[in-house]
Structure formats: C-alpha cells, structure tokens
Length: 89
Image 1 (cartoon, one colour):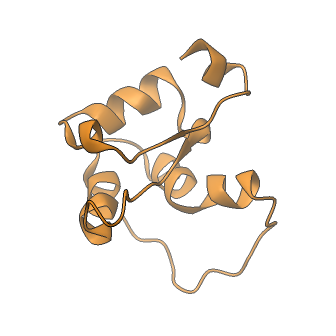
Image 2 (cartoon, one colour; image 1 turned 90 degrees about the horizontal axis):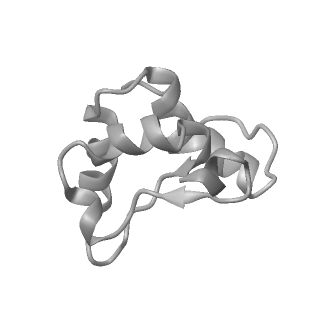
C-alpha cells in the first residue's frame, strides 16, 4: 500500500480475491483511485461482470473514470484518446 501511495506501484482490479465485497472501495481508500487499473482476469471471469463491480462500487464517478479509462491512458502513455462512448456509471 505504501509503495502505491508514493507512485511506484500500480494495482489492477483482477484476481480471484477481487470479487470480495467492498474490495474496490478499500483499494480506493487505501491505495488511491489514481493507482488502480481495471483488470478483467479474462478468461477466468466475464469482462462485463468485472466492469459492473467498478460501476456499482461506492466510490466517486471520478474514481470510476480513473480506474476504467484514464489510468490506462496514463500508464501506457496513450495521451487523450477520443472516447467511443460517454462514461456513465
């Protein structure tokens, strides 16, 4: 957790343990939404199910945008790509 807070660690939302209730909220609180990347853990889990976990989490819309899109753009140095659809939690 400390390494993520200081900018040298990214964490993704995939893994078998990531389906535990409240884990996304905990990660945003402890690590920060700006260090979390959406991960689907495909083919083990269904991608839409993993996305709904983020969309249904009790976190801000800004945190959801960061996790689902903006952090990946930053991590992969993709700049600001046009969105194919408007984000709607």
